[in-house]
Length: 154
Image (cartoon, rainbow, N blue to C red):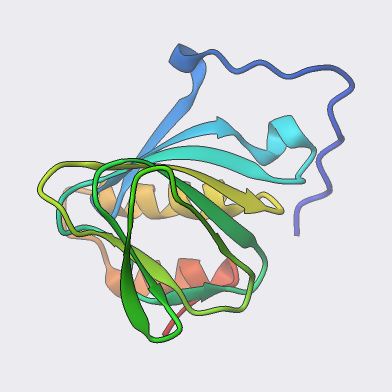
């Protein structure tokens, strides 16, 4: 386990062009605030998911997660059923709850995401390294990386 990141002692400003962009699973995640900037308290991302995209059902052992739908047609899996949610909708998923989302439209889905505490950005970056290889990603390795970060597929 990494030592705790010290809390910032001043306001943190991350200009758009300095935010880190990570690509994995067909998604593009822009890390707006990482654990490094928040003292490990939370992470904030913007995410673009292509039509038909979205993760398999999963649960986070370590993080609570929230989403704010900015653009596109989002559908969330809640209590065993899919529900379409309009732009402007906020969704909260507490740790331990099986959930997922998908882009049910024909244009990119754009959302603002937040995880608390931080750490999801490290998981996503490690998966991006697998997706960046010249061969298809080793999905067994992806599942192992997820488990190391307390993310389990349902």
